[in-house]
Length: 503
Ligand code: PHE
Image (cartoon, rainbow, N blue to C red; front, side, top):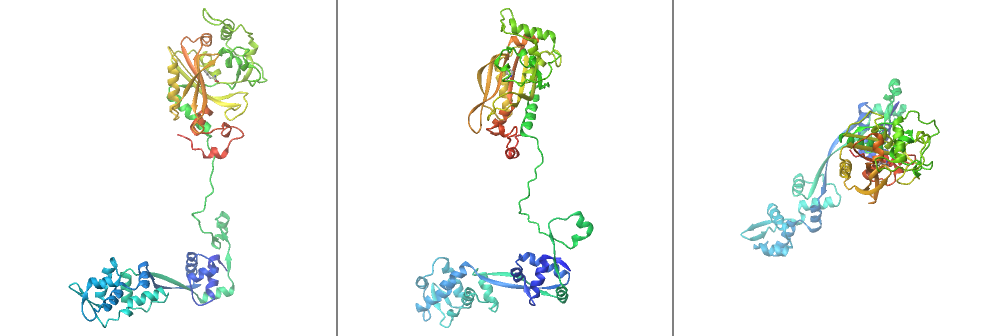
């Protein structure tokens, strides 16, 4: 026969004598009293034990009760002082007796009330007389208090005395159900035949259900205080979540999204931007050149106009670079170092046709640079590209747009620094303060496109444009100080898990 482990333990422990209280069984089995009680009830259900219940009353001294054990009951002390003052013969002034008794504060009232109640004497017109026959030295209440203090049983004490002590708050009364377990004949038989502890399992399996084994096993108790294993599902990376938010914000500001190739012709990446072909950023040191055939499709007349701008400049007073120009160089493919290549594709009319002002476009896309890895630089990062085409734009429009944009992410102290780009005039770098280090960090680059850029593209109004770093925005929002913690092979997975994404 198999029974749950706790039942077997209780049955064995109870069989040693006739009757065992739950408390003793708990001591002997090492189980918790609740567990023993439950096992006992389960055993009783099967007829293996009987459980007898007795209500027992226990008395315990209160703090005040303990004080009176040491000092004597106030009424007894009053009686002693009264007898000493001669009040057993003639009434004595109450003030004199109280003064001699050493009683003070609330004890005085307690003493007087009980003195009268117990017939130790009488109080009349401010005088106190003591009953010479009263036996205050064997006060029954005091006797019970002392007995309790000595740990004696007071079950036999007078019920009224006990009640009085409880109502005086000198004694606490507790009622308890004491359960005793007796093994029945059936239980004895079972023990003789042999009973084994069933296996304890912590989970129910389909196999246990089909085999019926679930009926014989004991399930471990739930520990609702135990730490639960953390459940971690996949989640969208905070960089992606922030990118999505940036897109929402820009769409909310009236922008449309641009799309375009990651690997593109140098023509779109650099030449359209009036970047001279011998510019240091165009050497193999900085760009990720790709060993693929050159681009085939380029708008021929645009190529001519761009070449012309490079050679001779634009406008009546224009001046070009007088530097070498090679169409082969233009057609070579590389990974884009900025998404301004997309802006060129759109502004030229190559992607969605000729655009009439006003227009607003953006992209949040990856760019690739052969930088040295450090806490603020990666070989690839996300650029928030954008431009606004309209008549009569000024630097104030540019700054206002950034302020509005960054405010949506809780960043309100953007700073601007004059800068140089071959393709914008004027140009500004943007800075924001890192929330943890307090340092000003560069968060973007911007400006008004030059005529040398716009004229070949066929754009006749103003265009303000920018490229902002998504990772830097993330640093300002979440306080990261090493971008490699959130991006790439050295990512700090814990940090990514714990970072609460701002909504
Ligand atoms: N292309 C620039 C960069 O990568 C950003 C920029 C875009 C600046 C458009 C001005 C105008 O830093």
